[in-house]
Image 1 (cartoon, rainbow, N blue to C red):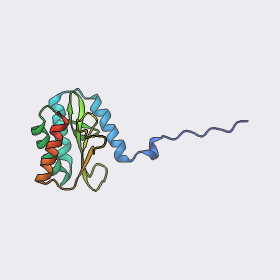
Image 2: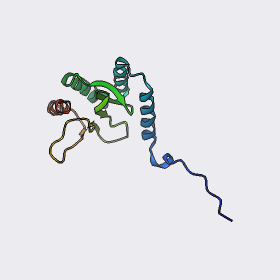
Image 3: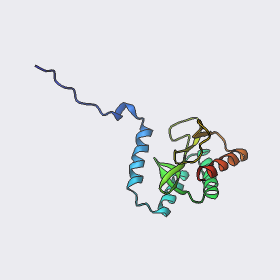
Image 4: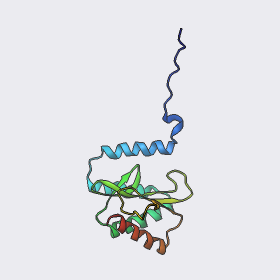
Length: 147
């Protein structure tokens, strides 16, 4: 007689952290949203406002930098993070340190960003503090990303 099968466990039960599960739920909510650009930007600004300092301060400065440098990018949220898209595709996004309990925030670029530099290049930039020099460097990256 064959042995009784054990009930299958949810794969996500031990694979994903609570923060990762929350981010996936945010993505589902974002995909169900209407696509209204004004609402998408409002959602982006709301996510920034929810952040604790210093993440909020960095995100606010990056939002101004990105929208000024690349006005063709539309602010939105992506997995519950502030993101900036071109033609509906996310080009870059800000991940606060608090989102996944990391020691620093990051500005990430997706494969839709034109930041290629030979055969090897970084796609995430860690940010502990945002200096004027850092802003200038990131402004050049954002401009290149949408070129």
